[in-house]
Image (cartoon, rainbow over all chains, first blue to last red; front, side):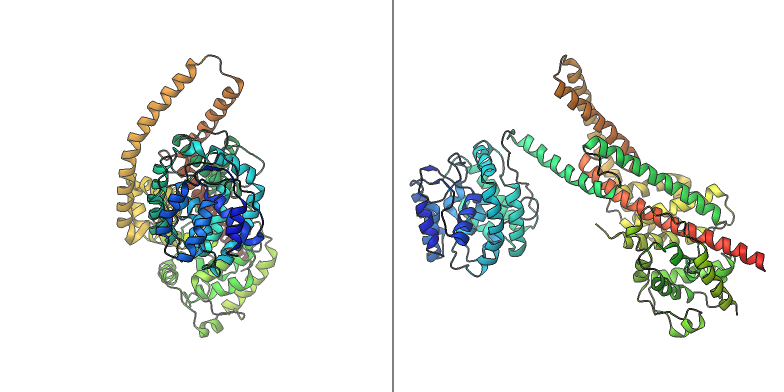
Length: 435
Length: 199
């Protein structure tokens, strides 16, 4: 495998256009020969003038083995098409980390993504040394690489525009980013980024000096901090490439991403596309929810003359199971929750049955509060005292409530449960309790 | 995103606690007062559950404490940790609002200029016209949304959308829990009435 790469690279001899190859290309190269060992489609290679840089590179390279391979890679780096940015100075400067391939690949953290350079560095770095690490990483990379082959055209466009991007901070492929993130997730990062910074610093390319330096600095920053400060964006074909519009584009993408979340959250938003329509739906939804809250609080105020919601009572009566008839977990959860509250008022004996008594509330409330604040497991004896035979000691308040309020799927369902099923049980329990 | 069920749990817990703290003092309240109390305690419950991480929760608490009559109620509802919470909220809101006031003035100036610029242009191509119309629509709606979401007036679009997401999740949880309790209480009342009749 190791030998294949240099051979392949040799085959790829082409006019040295340029100086730099993008990380993407490098990665592709690597993946290609890794998995296919065939001619890749990259076109361009480094100019022989880069040999000098290679020399520098070699100095940086610690591993002699890697060095030779890398030199090959460097000299024969390929680009999908000639117009590729000269702005990729990193080329020669990879530091070969002994480390895993994966880290190179990426992503300095989340959104920013990765430095293409780093990925290439990684990919091209000692394949043999990282043979173990590489395979899984490469495996991941290979999928994207294959994808990449299909998107070469697009990437080539992007690369062509890369020249214009030189002024911008960073460049990254969105899709490559995704792939990198996949790999990155496995491997982690940082070492490469630090090395990358070093390599970048030694670059002699004037064009993207600032950008590469910036990115390298950013990478090093990113390597220390998981999330990078900079968002790396690449201008697409036919789009303006000044930093303002790029930043604007990033912002717009973020907004559209969030709007997608909102689409899932707000029912009925799927049919509408476009910001204005979706905003309209969102506004209507929020307004309707707010109105519902008002209405429900008014209802609660009327239904409850003295604002004492004895949750324990409510639970005890298995009301919730009834109203949670639509809910996935019903019976057991109610039984579990009930004991938690039953414990509170042993003396009361389900005064709840008689409704929400006012006078006795304070001690109950205190007890309830205590219960609420500290999940407890009910004593078994009390279970017997209560009429709920099928009780199981609840684990915690939280677990119970969670079961009870597993309303995820029940949005918008009307609570108009039929009264018959539970009234029977409730009355039965009432009788039992009173006896 | 936080799980909705745990959100509801948390909300219910705090809400009940707040209500208990509140009702222990007052004896008789008319319907409106009760409704206010219920709503207020619910709002504060969820807002405190967020612990000041989201802007709308901070704004809710801030609004509640601003009103003098509400303030006492709010403090009582929030309980022992109210002081800390209110302080934290007020400081964060205060500094932010100052910045925002400045920022909003700048934005206002800028928007006035841009509007003037647009009007000067006489014949814009169809596409540009449509785009500007769409933009204005979006802006109008964003304004409305900003009014709806508490504390949203000063946010930029991105954070507004995030806050809206959170706020919607909260409203849903609130509606579900309240509905549950309302129906349960109703049921109990019916039962009681029925039981009384039987007896």
